[in-house]
Length: 218
Image (tube, rainbow, N blue to C red):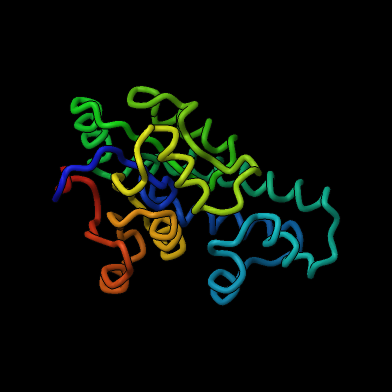
């Protein structure tokens, strides 16, 4: 593998396997709003990869106020953080991630995180996983409401670490994230196969490798 001047990580599903916690949180929100949980069909068609406010609007059949969307979007993330903390066995970074951070820091290769998470969750991750041991938390790009999409977030992350995105290695886990990284100008995308879709991921533009964890990547 050739040398890259900078590295950008997605977070959820890439550095931290947390999809079950999001499902639990949305099921709880569904109970609050509709008095029943979510179906497998709803999960794939209306929830996965969809912004919080749109999921809330869907659960209200489009009949909700801005205040309700904001309230339940924030409540969903509160539930999510609660479920993360309660499941102590899985509340850790993906295997090998910390060792890889150590290697990047030792070799003076700049890196940061570009995540669609909100600030409260980013602060939660920084505190829980002590991410400030490896990077400046202020360098993390997150959903502050100013980015049009993940493409813009990846471009900002490259700018933050001072590396042309064509010279960056990006780690992602979702098809939409992979597509965004490629559209942002990255041709070196490593996919963390948290969804067991290795064959599908390997065929996507820009993908150079599919891995299960960071253990063997170092």
